Image (cartoon, rainbow, N blue to C red; front, side):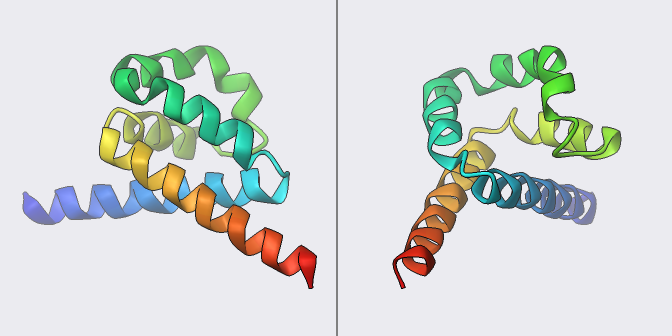
Length: 99
């Protein structure tokens, strides 16, 4: 059972990384961080609200990945992980642009 949990967490992080990369690429990391910080205390409820945002996120994720993404956001640790990843990506992107 522990292996299943580890595999699930690993899959969630893969999807979260994919979302982070696409948001950074589209220069939407800052607004995404703002939204994630705002909903972090209510991460479970916010993840359920993703049902309504499905059409907006279709360019970022496949249907299967979207389901994993919504499930991942139920866990506040994953929300915090995604925020940190977006911040790191934004810093890296800023460093590349200034050179």
